[in-house]
Length: 91
Image (cartoon, rainbow, N blue to C red; front, side, top):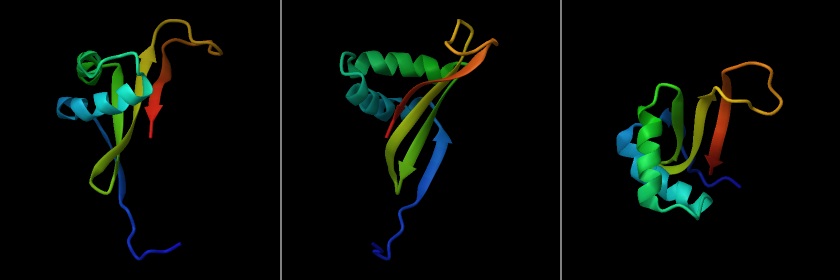
């Protein structure tokens, strides 16, 4: 169905200013965590050298995120170290 209005999608790497809305989305996925705890965790993640959070923006609104990191511990199905790992994804 064409409406004549195309929604613009973009993705960018999160910074500290993005943490509050990342935490809100993450709380919907990980309901046993508070938004405050998630803010603390995501502040550490976006500041880390081996972590990244990528944000999906639909139009002008955040619509999802992907949390990625390098893992140095054993990851099932891998033979190398470190391993890129998708920790969480929310859309």
